[in-house]
Amino acid sequence: MRWTESFISTLWQAPSEAEILSHKLMLRAGLIKKLAAGVYIFMPLGLKVLRKIENIVREEMNASGALELLMPILQPEELWQESGRWEEWSNEMMCVRDHHKRQFGLGPTHEEIVTDIIRKEIKSYKQLPVTFYQIQTKFRDEIRPRFGIIRAREFTMKDAYSFDRDIDGLNKNYKKMRSTYCKIFDKCVLKYQIVEAESGIMGGDVSHEFMALADSGEDVIVLCPSCGYSASMEKAEVLNIKQKTIDKCPKCAGCIEIRKGIELGHIFKLGDKYSKSMGAKFLDKDGREKSIIMGCYGIGISRIIAAVIEQNNDENGIIWPESIAPYQVEILPLNVNDNKTMQIAENLYEKFLSKRIEVIIDDRNERPGIKFKDADLIGIPIRITISSQKAKDNIVEIHKRDTEENKLVDIDELQQFRN
Ligand SMILES: Nc1ncnc2c1ncn2[C@@H]1O[C@H](COP(=O)(O)OP(=O)(O)OP(=O)(O)O)[C@@H](O)[C@H]1O
Ligand SMILES: [Mg+2]
Ligand SMILES: [Zn+2]
Image (cartoon, rainbow, N blue to C red):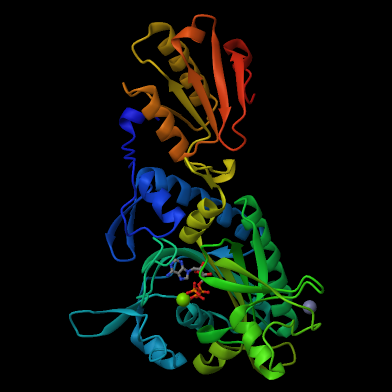
């Protein structure tokens, strides 16, 4: 990609409404633009990152054996009346009416829809277990949309739903999802903590949240260094209210530590909550009719971007991990009017393209100061700078965004770059 054709629009200063660093940096790097409160446009550079995360999630979900489908955003009110959640969700559900005045909700989550599929399709134990997932836009009319895409009203989620014959099956699937989530967040290079959580409006009695550790996080996590117990503050309070203490670990009575986090994902053992209310049954081996046992598993795909930035930045900008960086390499010719500089830069550019290395060349006729500033801001992992001085000797400078390591390299050596 050529910078001059890339439509990247960086800002020196973030709009004052941006409260936390990831929101500021996303706006300054031109990854997103605001359309309305909690509603954002993903610009081309930001969309590349979103797609990379989607691909990581898709790869790991497929590897776990889950099947991808795509459920509608438009959800008939009647299904939510059946599960009994229409009222419960009334504050957060965005609603529309069609011209017959039939009411629809814009999906904030998809338990009702997926349960409707299952109750129609599944008859026998032979069709179980099965896990479906999708990567889909969700709508939630958050009371307080904030922090950019962290708490948005329209956002991308990966949601998965497992269906089993019994609790044993659910436990197996739950464990599998938990380890799949670890692989996903490891690939995104996130530092996170798995905590016991409250199940709330989703239902069920066991759930865990994956929390990215970050001081700007809205969620409070309780950790016990003595026994390793960790829980969301909500969960710990529920347990501790019984014990009438707040600073003691509910498991070993050791002293707890408090951390802040951003919720990346949440997994639930739902049991028969939806299959009972909506009548999703199957005929078991023993000839008896039983309720299908469910689990559900969410990941905030768009929220991950912000969490990664919260954990990977410096005063100059974003520091992308390779796995989700919009480009792997940035070529930075300091003087685009110098022939030798441009000859080397263009050669390298072609070479990387032919090797399918994602590369961007800053071919703008701008001052070096501006180019360096923008390069740091958008945070491409490897930068190759070409100055007219060094170009004479066929030397370029390689800079690593994360370690700030600099290395002078002969371009012949670079030809072997990532063979
Ligand atoms: N408003 C939002 N904007 C962006 N991502 C969100 C939003 N709400 C939820 N998510 C993401 O979707 C995942 C699954 O949704 P879930 O219903 O479990 O969230 P939640 O418990 O409502 O989250 P929160 O407590 O942050 O409101 C969450 O773990 C989070 O990463
Ligand atoms: Mg919520
Ligand atoms: Zn403890």
